[in-house]
Length: 178
Ligand SMILES: CC(C)(COP(=O)(O)OP(=O)(O)OC[C@H]1O[C@@H](n2cnc3c(N)ncnc32)[C@H](O)[C@@H]1OP(=O)(O)O)[C@@H](O)C(=O)NCCC(=O)NCCS
Image (tube, rainbow, N blue to C red; front, side):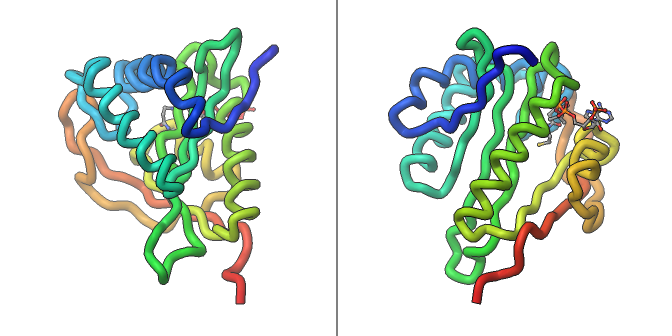
């Protein structure tokens, strides 16, 4: 997509991107994405959620990226860094969202490339995630080399309130450091 820029969101720049992140989340839920919210989510609830994300970015337990076009957020992704002393080699890919009118232009893959590079740099060589079974995200992640580890039935509601299974995926970028 022309002139799209990928940026890491810092504690300082968070407030600048928050309204766009809220819009992106509402767009994804309205489109049926199973990302932790139901159809009744509104801007206030989404803002509250991003305030918790901001706190985790501040603590260093979460990394956040956006793609902006003409200063509008068109895509985003998060990496949750496991804080347990026995899991410092792993990180969870979360809330990868591409605005509905910006899909299939490579932005999701671009975000995953940035996220994987940073994970490797931080020694987080094991990435994992869950995503709704049967969603577009399955062929997306499989195309990027993620291995399907299994499926859990009735894991989470779709925004319309119907329980759906989730698929678990992982990718080993690098084995644990000695
Ligand atoms: C999944 C998602 C992030 C993909 O983002 P995207 O920017 O459209 O993906 P890309 O353009 O980088 O696609 C890369 C490849 O993934 C595959 N892919 C992406 N979307 C696909 C779809 N709807 N159906 C089949 N394959 C798809 C294709 O192989 C594609 O390459 P191609 O376009 O050259 O054929 C996007 O559809 C989305 O935001 N979905 C809603 C939220 C969600 O489910 N997030 C993931 C779970 S947390």
